[in-house]
Amino acid sequence: MRIVIALAAVVVAVGCGGGDPGSGGAKPSAEEVGSREIGVLAPAEAADVAFTYDPEAAPPGAELELEVSRGDGSTTVRLSADMLQPNRGYAAHAHTDPCGRNGTDAGPHYQHEVDPAATPERPSVDPAYANPHNEIWLELTTDGQGNGVAGTTVPFVFDDRVPSSIVLHEQPTTETGHGRAGSAGARLACFTASFR
Image (cartoon, rainbow, N blue to C red; front, side):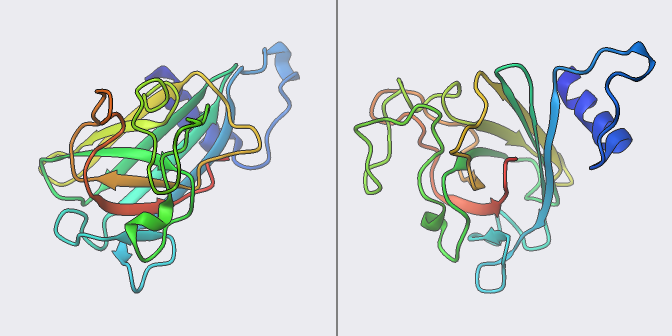
C-alpha cells in the first residue's frame, strides 16, 4: 500500500518534469513513476480507448484509471474504477494487444515469460506460466456506488514487450488449477493503456 500512496504523491509533486534527485542531500527514490491513464467506458461501436462489451456489468460512463510504477526489479500496477456495477467483483488482467470492438481483440494475457505451448487460438492455461507472478492479475471489488481499487506488484519490469490493455472479466477471481489457470470468464470491458 505504501508504494501506491508514494506513487500518487510523486505524480502530484513531480508531474512530467521530474526533479533534481540530488538536491537537499535527499536520496533518490528507487521507484520510478510510470504512467497514469484514465478511460471512460463507451459502447464498442463508439469507443476509442475504453470499451464495454456488457453495458449492465460494465456501464457506459464508468471510469477506469490505471497507474504503473517501477521499482528495483518490480512493477506495481493499480486499477481504480468509478461507477461500475455496485457490490460485485471483477477479475482484471493485462493483455497483449489494444482493445477493439470485440473483447478478443485484446489478445491473450501478457506474460513476462511466455508459455511456449500457447498459441493465439489456445492461450496459456498452464499454472507454471498463467499465474499472478508471471502475469498481471488484479481482483477489483466494487462498493455500493460501483467504486473500487485493486493493486498488485509483480517481480519483473517490462523490456521491449509491454502490455497494451487491461481487461475486466465476469468472474470475481482468476482460476489457478491446471488446464484452467488464468481463466476468469467472459470479457466485460477493455481499456487500452501504455503501461509505460
